[in-house]
Structure formats: C-alpha cells, structure tokens
Length: 142
Image (cartoon, rainbow, N blue to C red; front, side):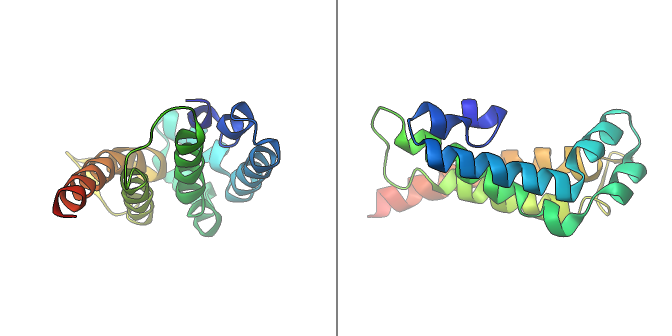
C-alpha cells in the first residue's frame, strides 16, 4: 500500500532501501519533467484543456510503468505467498493507463472530456480486470 502513496516507499518498507531510493528519484524526475502535479491541479479544478497543454506527454508516458512496477515489486517482495503470474494485472494495468493517456485528448465520455489525469485512471480498471482474467486462463491452461 505504501507504493500506492509514492513509488519506492513499499521497497523501503521491505528493507530494499537502495531500490526504494532509486524509484523515489525516478518518480520525482518523471513528475517534475512531465509537469504532472500541475496537470493534476488543473484537472481537479476542471480545467482539462489547461492540464493537457501543460503536460509533457513524452515524460508522462513513463509514469504508468514506473508506478505499476513499484506497486508490483513491493507486493511480490512483501511477506506472504505470491501466486503464479501475479504480475499480469499490473502489466495490463500499466498498458491500459498508457493507452488512456495517449487518447486522453480525444475520448469524450457522456459529453465530458476527462483529460490526461482522469481518463487514464478509468482505464486502469479494465486493465486490471483483463490482466486478472488472462492470468486465470493461463494458470488454468498450464
């Protein structure tokens, strides 16, 4: 759960301090270079076009993979048993978030342009579901 708050915190909690520090540095680098906090602020104020204009998408596209990797890595290293192919929902989640980010300026749902913050968040849900279903199918087949 700590990696959801900030990538790298879960690794530090799991006593992987160097990996945690690297992930925190990468998160700050991507966050600052992409202007992500400013994009979040504009999105929450309802200024979707301003959010789209201020963001550097070339940098922001690194964020979903970094974020989902940090969550998966902390999860799989935590105490307890990890099932086979447990990474698949995280991989599909990162993929779908990235797709949502790429199409965030084009997709309108119910007449509302959700933009580069809220649309990728919505795309996480089908990504996790499809990843979980694919994992279940592969585990059943093998």
